[in-house]
Length: 279
Image 1 (cartoon, rainbow, N blue to C red):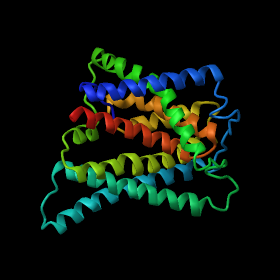
Image 2: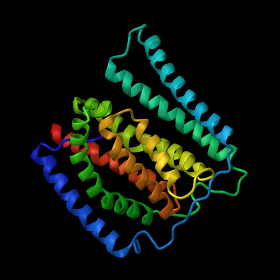
Image 3: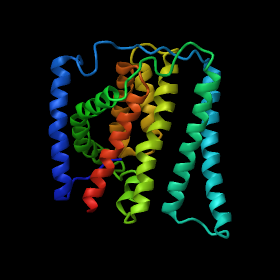
């Protein structure tokens, strides 16, 4: 999700957030990550899933998600007297069902298939207050980078004659006027999507790629997959960088809830900008 700053209310909000983010970034740079984030990097270990099994698990998860999306659309048609769902309803119906399917499949994987292993999804305990505080700090520290990318990346795309249209969800939210619909979308992008995507891309893909690639290659590869799976040129580079930062957040805190919260706050910030723009 990538906003366009136009309205006075949105400009004021964006200015406040950017000012706070510059402070957090400066603190992060000069403190070298100490203090708020702690000195320790957990160096999360891989799951030990073999290459073939790993590929089969990913194929199963995506087949499960696409089947859930198709089933949801079909059920809507049957319950509405064989009427086709409007495009916006169909989009969010598929999104809800697919992410619920991802969440169900990943829950079964982590808590049943990987349960006998000694490796933990979150080796560190974050605490009720410290972990959300660290997550807000980590997101704010990264916003200046994202702001610069959002400014210059469209110019690069235009130079290369590549599409610069925003993601479909951004277009859908921009046209919404119903408060219940906004609440439903808010739950989707702030709660459901961050949980399912972080379990998939950081919890599963990033960590298991460590079994096959050294150094930062697992973060680079999982972030590239994360960005590419959104099927949008405009968000490709920003989401790639966000994915890498989420990997770093996971390593720095040792808790999967840190990237989940950072991801949720990122989406919440974008949703807020879009709603302020429409307001």
